[in-house]
Length: 558
Image (cartoon, rainbow, N blue to C red; front, side, top):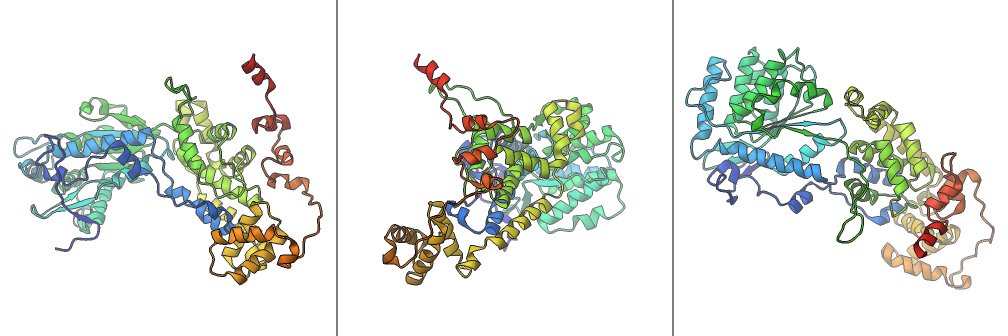
């Protein structure tokens, strides 16, 4: 039998746990992962090549943009959530076993609920539920949905058990409808089932004039028919108490899914959804679940000292920003992230991971567009002021620490981020048309242009490099860039007569004051360009380590 490409044939593995042994729905799941395996499975896959910093600007724009989707650095709360979901899925299947008939009992009771229209009725003795529930609350942009998607992607969504002729859905993730009605929530459920299995549940049930009660009963039965491991309902703040028939009806439905149907449920929302969970949900047998998981922005806590090594331990904020800082495609980038830039980065983003990454991406694009080719405090502040204005009130609410203000601005999103990226990309392209070495000197040879930029970065004079690069490609067209570099450097250091290249005129190159920000970091003129009323030239030099701290030295030696 040929299965659809996203189906997996069941392969059974002993988990080593007695309560899971002999349950095909659990033994067909991937092995329970160790902590290192979780980190490896969640971390983003990014191909970074340091030589790419010398490619054309419009190519670097694409390389930088991939950070928005592909960068993911697991932190402690990601690992905690993976552990909770791993337990929820497997424990939920303990009470739904294909081998001992408990799943069929659930299905028989589900048929009775459809016929009677009562979600709490059962035909046989009420089947035991081992399901748990979890509510995940955090502001938009904090990484809730992205983390869930990455964790769920470690499971095959559909597993076919050939010897049982049974199709298992390990997880189903749906978004709460914007109108907030339970009826449309059911529609979304059936649509997601159809996408996973290529069935037509939505046409058979959702598009007919069934009552909400009947739809809910069919929905619960469908969950049992396909043994859904966990149901994730995202954007739960859209669920309207008015449209859904009141908070009590809403909460009873969710509790029934967990405690009667035996389906683990994860409810995900912003702080606006908090009132939903602060009423009867506490007393409605919530002890059977994992309770609430509050997804706070990352905190910039001061590092503590390791008593064994007497060195400061890396905090999550330091580890996260260090990992992200490596992915720079800027020609004058600072390899080490300074505390000054890190502190500014946190103050502007407030630890909201989506803002942290987008500010970093936009700053790199701005650095290319204006020719500074490095990230500085003043550049970060300018990008924040120009590009992130829509989220200023929301980030100000986070800085205030006032829960009421935070709830008002819980939907922390940056509208039109793609348009902002395109505008910066267009500005870079305009600059490219003026400084296009490939078309001006090398007839569009990108390898020659990359080699030219690499040699200039090695302090070779640009006007002397051009004829040497041309000569190298004429004489050795098949050599790689790595092989050509020492060859050209040897020519460069050889007396001019042997290579038939006229030496450039020894004129002192002057850089206008408005272009001092494009100079190297160690250049005093660059340090002067970064000074402001709040941060004087002296402070800039001190922070960069250019000024010897005599007082600290005297305290150490005295």
